[in-house]
Length: 113
Image 1 (cartoon, rainbow, N blue to C red):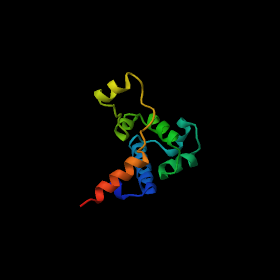
Image 2 (image 1 turned 90 degrees about the horizontal axis):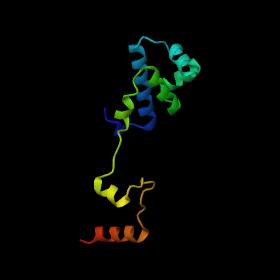
Image 3 (image 1 turned 180 degrees about the vertical axis):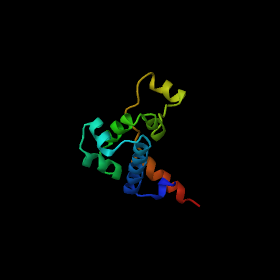
């Protein structure tokens, strides 16, 4: 499946469908999962439609014993050893913005034929 060609809504619906499949594989009703999470069945139904809260999706994966899927969803991205040396043990908190002068000079260089 190519998620790059799908809208955000379509991707959310696909994730909801996959959660539904996991629930059915465990032979659990929507009400049973909703009760475990502490939400209404209608609220849980929204999750399976792709319109639920992210925190509820995590709780659902916990009930279905599939928290391992989060590691595949967004794997941890460590910094390179050289980047860590530059930071001198500090955690990186922000991205570096491209300065307007650098951005304009890069665009000018691209136009030179």
